[in-house]
Amino acid sequence: MMKRDNFIKGERDNRKSKIVIALTTFNRLDYTRQCLDTMFKNTYYPYQLVIVDDNSNDGTRDYLKSLKKEREFDLEEYYTMTVKV
Image (tube, rainbow, N blue to C red; front, side):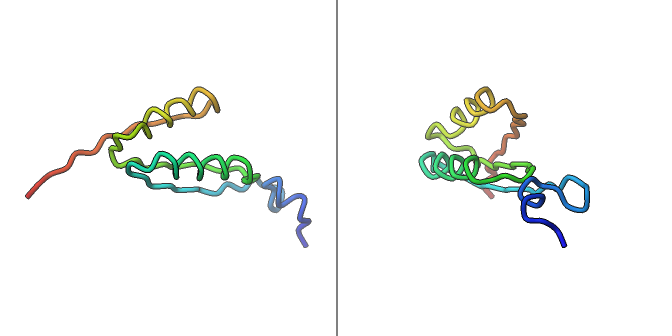
């Protein structure tokens, strides 16, 4: 039986577990900030964070860039374009 303490630290069967957390956003800076703050405070497992910003123009992209410096994580930017048919 796996001990709870080991599971909290992200250990499972002597291997590091990793979860993927995906977040999508579009012009919801306040909600994005609130979501990420809560996640950073309450997530103890090793994780990969994937944030998909659909070209927000409310400061979300700048906020994510500031997090890159503050939290020292990799930030890959991909740009999308809207095609009208």
